[in-house]
Amino acid sequence: MPARPCELQQRFEALLREHRRIVFHVARMYAGHIDDRHDLVQEICSQLWRAFPSYDAARRFSTWMYRIALNTGITHLRQASARAERFEPLSDELLETVEDDTPSRLADERLRELDALIAQLDPFDRALILLHLEDRPYTEIAEVLGISQTNVATKISRIRQRFRQQRANDAGTPGSTHGTR
Image (cartoon, rainbow, N blue to C red):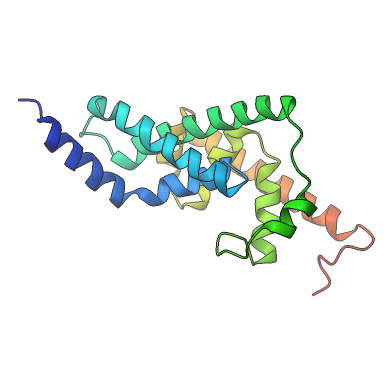
């Protein structure tokens, strides 16, 4: 017998609470500004709720959730790119003068550096790295992204190499402070 609407909602809310970290990590990965992150969190939750009646409880909820959250994040990123073509954003310098110093601002230089490197990746590779940084097993990453485990390992290795090369290039740039510690 199918679950009643109230039971379905309670089950969804419990699972969402348990795995909410996934939503916030995906939003952080695919939205640069705090307001965009809030919008993306709402959109991910909305998409999860719409799809929840078709969730197969025989499968891992986190894998199902990642797939929906990442697809929503990628769609958001594409739409943001389309919007950016029509609007000219305020400069970062101007925004910094009015931003408050909230915990959402990254204080750690290495984390900012990693974020900058990840931002250069295409949406699919961002999803891959997000799952990898979440310590998800290659089997789960492969299932979420619809690729083989071998492909997961190869792509992660190539991305790591690209990051190393970028850091090495940055360290060799005059005026750079990287590698001087």
